Image 1 (cartoon, rainbow, N blue to C red):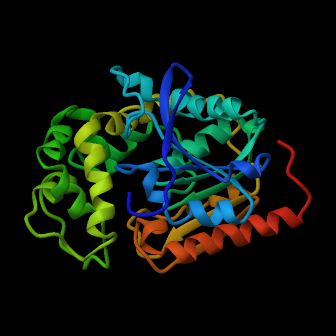
Image 2 (cartoon, one colour):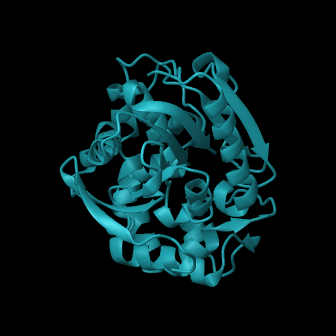
Length: 317
C-alpha cells in the first residue's frame, strides 16, 4: 500500500471473518472504530488512522462483510442491519471492549446509526460523515424512494433489478471507480437511466481525481477480487432494515458529531436535532468523499471533537 497503513489480520466474528486493520494497540482502553461506506474499503481511512493512533486512540478499521478479504456470505439477508451491527459488536467483544466511539462514512454511517439504535450500550459516541440520521417514517425506505425518485434511482434499481448493476460495475472496476472517485464535479443535466451505470460506462471521468493512481489501485484490486455484489446487498436490505428498526427507541442520545460535505449531493437532515439532540454539526468545503477530499480538515475536526468530549463528563451508555 502507498502509506504506512497497517497490515491486516483476519478476525472471526458473528459467523464471518473480517479483514481488520489496527493501529495504536498500545492505547488499549481508548477504542475508535472506523466504518467505511460503498463502494469503499478500510483504506479510505488511511489519512485518519496514523493521526488518531498518535493522539492516543486504539484505532480499529474493519473491511466490513462483503468487502476486501472479509467474508462474502451468499444470502442477501446476511447483509441486514442486525448482521452488520452484530459484526461490530462482536469486534468489540474480540478486543475486550464494552463500548467504543464509532465513526462511519456513507453506508458506514448508516450502519453506525443502526448499531446505536439497536445496541446503544455498546456505543459511547458517534461520528457520521455525509449520511445523517435517517428518519424511519411510515413507509419502507425503498418504497418511498421509488414513489419520489422513480425506478432508475440507484437505491431502487439495486433492489428491483438485482444483479444488473453489479455486472456492469464488474465489467471494468477500474473505469467505474476512477469515474466515481472524483471531486469538483461540474453540475450536469440528469440523463435517462441509472446514473451510476451511466457513470460506470463513461469513457471520460468528470471533475478531478480524489486520490492518486496508486491509492486508486488499492480499491480497484479489492473490487476485482471481491466483486460488487456483497456491498450492493447492503442496499437490498433497506426495507428489511426499516422493519428491523421498528421497535428501537428512535432517539440517539450519545454525543454525536455530524460532518457534511457542503457540495455533497447527499441531503442534510432538516430535523437532525429532533432525533440526535446531542449533536455538533460541521460542514467542510468538499463533495461526498469527505475524509479523502479533505483529509487534514476531517482529521482535525474529529480530533478536536474527541478532545472536547474527553474534557466533558463521560457518557455512560
